Length: 241
Image 1: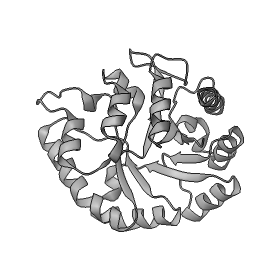
Image 2: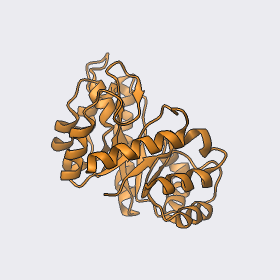
Image 3: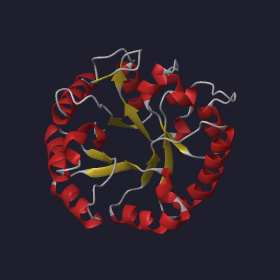
């Protein structure tokens, strides 16, 4: 099995030592890196780091604003140069019906443009997308019905919202390539894999059966990002066996 990790979990070092962060996740045994910013590095520098540590890029968490018309060409150029085929929008403001509708219009416009460039557009959920908004919408349902966007299901946040993440993965399997396998408590406090209340084992078995790439997202820096990344990888290897 090959696993990825969201580099936000190593944010204690990525901003000052991206090379070191990639070196450490490679040493642990991760195959894929999911970026959350490049901290001024050129595409060539990122490619060199990935090659040096025999890593592949599984995707990036990229704010949707980087795909607006003034930024689109430069963003696509950079991502193609680092061989990234998955741009994942990490969140959006859905506080009003107008903002939801505008985001849906944006996705429906930019998604096909990225597809023509060989890049898939995904959306990463938190818990709020599964809870009825003040204006009566369940955001995730709206995105499912009104767009063709792919979903990077954050299985912990789905669990926190009261969803069954396994049911979610099965129902949306044709629109999911990559998941966040993640753990935490029912009250919203994150935990390293295997130390919380989320159904990590069931999620693991489902994602494996459906051939979804599992990307660890664990953000507690307990006691630091590298150590937490190792704890999570060890949990995955235990589940594997």
